[in-house]
Length: 340
Ligand code: SF4
Image: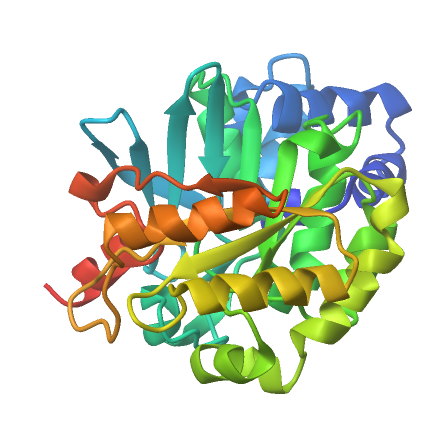
């Protein structure tokens, strides 16, 4: 078992059951989450016998970095090997004063969004809490001053909610990584009731709804989840929690000749207004992958779409494509490794 799969409370019980004082829990937590080290032996203020016992009974790292790719735009992609010999990816994205880390929560994904290479690859398994946390802790140990975390890599986080929630509790806990709620964005297709529990449990986390279509009929054509968890129900839940928080984000992957017309923009405006949801909109021009059924819209159409939304008083951003020379988009590198 990996020691970071235990919650902070479970670790405390473990230490107490050994008859050790509480400060030993704090010392252990310090080495796990404040100043991560490579081995139990590096936890120098713990008694040697305790370090040896941990080493016998637990693993400290659940994933191993096997490669770092650095893009011309300074985006870095970390490739990690899991214990079952698969690979997961995280991406470090510098942008002015921000350094954002994008992490994965599953190997593959079972949501099957038609525009997504990870979805196309199918689902293998959920990541454990330690595998989710280790992507962050590895960056921390290597000295990256991460300012923001986005849970937008491989997988649908709310489809692995039990493990994601356990990892988030450690991420935010003052004795854990102690990261600010407000600097974490979780992107989801919207799974009920997990989305409601997330909004209750972590009211300050930034939530991003992956919408990608102006109406339910079109969405169902590219996102099978729409038939089980319609976005209208998801938006109703989000509206319930609107008062307590900043804006939500709506993500809209722009697909040529599918959802990029001005009629689509008008419908999108109507849809969001009809749900009285205050949100900002991120337009994500599609990044084609080999064999993908969609193409990227022309620049002119993307700008026209954006302008119409702006004229209707929405905050709209076009997400820049980062790290395309190192296949930084979600799932691309795993796909290449599995299909050389
Ligand atoms: S877009 Fe997200 S939810 Fe959809 S298949 Fe890809 S990883 Fe899964």
